[in-house]
Amino acid sequence: MKIVTILGARPQFIKSSIVSKAIKKFSELEEISIHTGQHFDENMSNIFFEQFQMPKPLYNLNINKNNHGEMTGLMLDEIEKILIKENPQGVLVYGDTNSTLAGSLAAVKLNIPIFHVEAGLRSYNRSMPEEINRILTDHISSLLFCPTENAVKILKKEGIENGVIYSGDVMYDLFINQSSNKSLYNNPFVLATIHRPSNTDNPKVLNEIIEGLEEINSKIKVILPLHPRTKKKIKELDLSTSFTIIPPLGYKEMINYLINAELVITDSGGLQKEAFFSKTKCITVRSETEWVELIDSGANILCESSKKAICDAFNKMTLKKCDFSPKFYGKGKAAIKIVKSISSFFDTTKFQN
Image 1 (cartoon, helix red, strand yellow):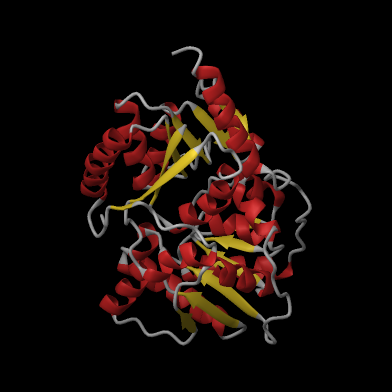
Image 2: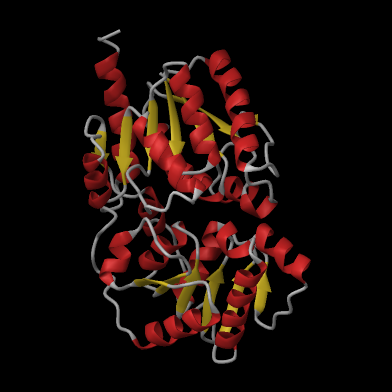
């Protein structure tokens, strides 16, 4: 049975690395991957194929630098052509990017089953493109692999129960299999990542965030791996910074920074979980998050995009003791459960066709 995997963004490369290894253990399954090109920076894509010894995708569409509608449309057109050529029995998608939605729409229009890894997440903020992408993908998928029990409950509320599987989170699988160095850095520091359009595209908002990080940097060193979008905006606005800026990090380097950091300040979705895995407190510079269990546990707090809010959150979390013991994301067996479920899906459906 042939599966086509759609990839396009940093988190998807990472998640795919662990699932692809599991797929290779099933002789009846063949995987072909398509890289949409959504992340085109070397450190945002190719480095992950090298680090995890993943084969390069058979197809690279090189579609990027477009607005959301144009990007999704171009991807949809090109992916559809490949699916017609390859004639797979299933399409595997990850997360909530434009690549995810384009791959899902191309598949459903060709009556190809969709397998969605990281299904059932909701921020309930429909101004975020990611929220629309994940909702639409969930509602047309055949198998929905939920990273948390809360995600299963959300899908049930939306009337989706068939094909829903609590798999656990493949990112936790990967994390527990990584070697890391807790004493890698001698001096305490805060790790920050800022990249969302809501935080970078408004000059006033970005300036407030930079000022907040500057204030914190006067107390403890702040290290910011700079996303290409944020780098471009900082240059356009000619903003001066005194905190430490470094290039985007590969997964293994990021984990080493995370486990050594005193605190994480981010607007990333995945990094909130990775901080929790690393037993590092987190401040999320957003008004909502899809990882609600981290907010409920107190290991993560939401924060407005202002200097005062960021500094207040920093002061609060610095003094707070957090519990990192809950197993929200499974037991590190998500990838094999996902692939077993896909294999069983084919065993069941082949007798129905």
